[in-house]
Image (cartoon, rainbow, N blue to C red; front, side, top):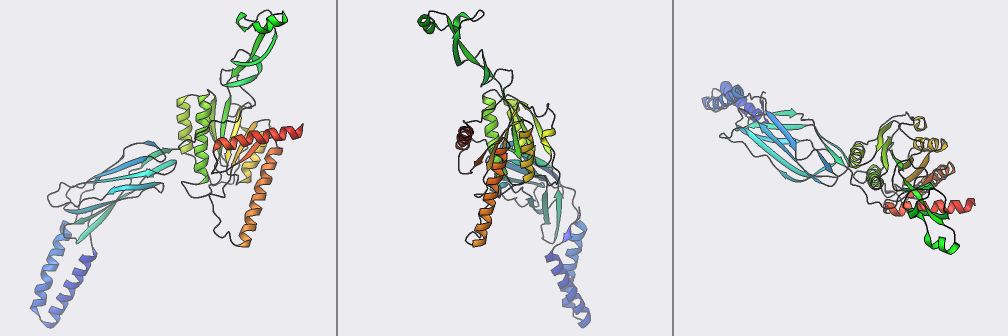
Length: 426
């Protein structure tokens, strides 16, 4: 690895050259005596100006963290034959905000050529942090020769989304055959009371309702709803990101998806993930802690895809998207291709719920006092309301989701609007 002259070297070289020329031109030996030591020093430094390739060890104190957590990165460099100073300049990802940084020390003549650098920072949003570039700036003791070395460690840290707290959940219309936390429409073995009916052969003795039987003088038995498992597919809109991270629409969607997945998995449902940004990326349904980890990792990889292609979600096979699954959709409702895909799912008989994130708070109108900007804003709101009505006409349960409101309150409004539409239909 070769050393190159610094600005100081060039200035000294120009000074020595000028003194040499003037000394020869005017016959002044004192000028030659001034130029000669400078030239000898520069030549000797240039002859020594070669270093071995440095050895770089880049590491982080964790490979996976949650957003908002602290992460420490360290760079250890071994520079054989180095006699001078060195500096480390790593390229930090935009979603990593340094909170504590220690500058690299200078290496003296007695140093062994080892340099250590530490930095601690906060992971501001979910995603993949790529640490793929470290620049070493090396300079000899005299300050006359320097060089730069670019290393590519290719280190990545996965930042998982922080789950929102959710206790109110949209209930699926269909259930599976396995035991779970939902009441099936048919009565059977369970814990939720359904009705009292006359005793028939085959009923268990413990099911007899003795109070009703003694009053009516005929044996009656209790019936219960069968507790069944449901399948939930979280559909994530990754067509576009509105706002600046870590407060962008994608960040709110990922946190909500993590909270909903945790809540459904706690009641023993099967949960899968479908990220749709023109191209569908699928994580099959499953249950348990391991499935929750898979969902969080898939959410961390979610990112917009620039494409004009729009895959038909209704054409997905039954093994990927069961017709009995509840498709719970999280979207900022920006791209109309996503609307069409959701309507196609509803038309094939899929149970679909849409939580449409309002993005006004994420993109403040900087020219809002202007009359024209307020008109444009109002037109956008009217278009959004019309798109929500189109989803509801297609049989989709859809509701606006405000950033400053809890997810439980949003889902509660969904229940209220569903009951209101049902009363109007009756």
